[in-house]
Amino acid sequence: MLMNQVETALINSPPRRWLQRYYEVPWMRRLGGPLPPGARVLELGCGPGCGTQLLLDRFGAGHVDAVDLDAAVITRARRRLTRRHGRYVLGVATYRP
Image (tube, rainbow, N blue to C red; front, side, top):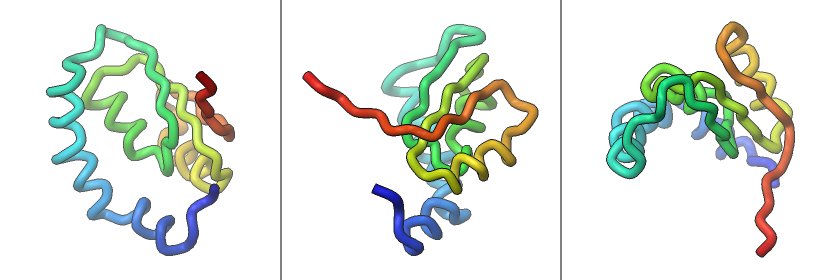
């Protein structure tokens, strides 16, 4: 399901980027530790690419495959990280046991 205007504004807001940088990054490091050098990462629900940028910069990912179901945010992510090691795909991830 695509986000409404309020959700989109919140995801693209400076407070959200602050939360990712100063809360989620340390939390993810405690859970998973550092990545192997040059690791390839799959990010589901990449949004406008802020998390993708953190995976490349703070975690040392060598390549990020980023997926989102909203074409507008995929476009923003591509613009944000045009020269970075990543692929941005419009799609949906589902799990079927």
